[in-house]
Image (cartoon, rainbow, N blue to C red; front, side, top):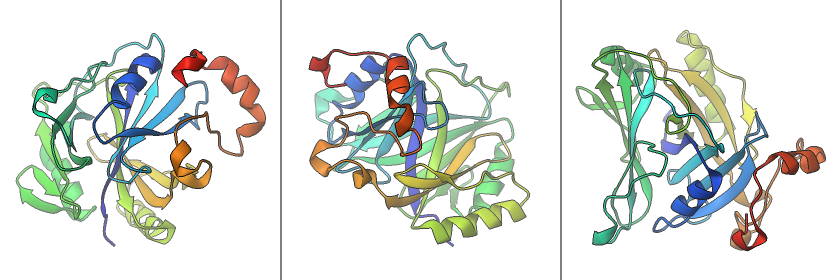
Amino acid sequence: MTLLGLHHVTALAGDPRRNLDFYSRLPGMRLVKRTVNFDDPGSYHFYFGAGNGVPGTLLTFFPWVNARRGVPGAGQIGGVAMALPLAANEQPLADPDGIPLRFVHGDSPCLRSVTLCQADAALTVAFLRDVLGLEQAAPNCLELPDGASIQVQHSPNGKRGKTAAGIVHHVALRVADEEEQLAWRERLVRAGLRVSPVKDRLYFHSIYFREPGGVLFEIATDGPGFQVDEPADKLGERLCLPPWLEPSRETIERRLPKFSSAEKL
């Protein structure tokens, strides 16, 4: 049983138009899916990634108009680093909602690291090493097979953060297929964690759990991918809904923020 690396990072954002403008213009990235939050279809869910949505390059967002701002603190993801093919004058880039994302130069887009803020860093490090099987490269640094890492940072005041706009919601790790995912689910349950049933996210399957410090993790399969409902050259151009939400399309579209046709959203 081996976790292949980082699959995606999901954050909560504010204005959808602003979010789309910023991330669709990142070098080497594109909007690969425009859908809704399957658990709360009153909001968009934007997926940005390289190519046709390669796992390990994905940043995803739940944007809300007039969303309240979150409060950083312990039990949260306090930073994400992503490599992009940046020109010298493009560094650094700042997320418009204050999401703690850092962009560094790389030959191609990929998630490089996430930082977990914890009141008890040692407890989380032990979980990542002993339960998830990550390689401990330094006292507070765990490495994944794809070269990405998870850093664990002690939160000085120990106060819990409040999740809302500007906060990273969760990080997803990669597995090859559903069989491997079920094996991981069994292992996590045996370790005493509360793990969700397998969720059908249409483009991949997911399970969710919180590590001992409270950060939400997901384990996601690599497939079936983003071309299950759109061809590669049309990814992100229309609102895609899973089959179980399609009968409610008219109601869902009426609730979502409106954009002009010229904006192709």
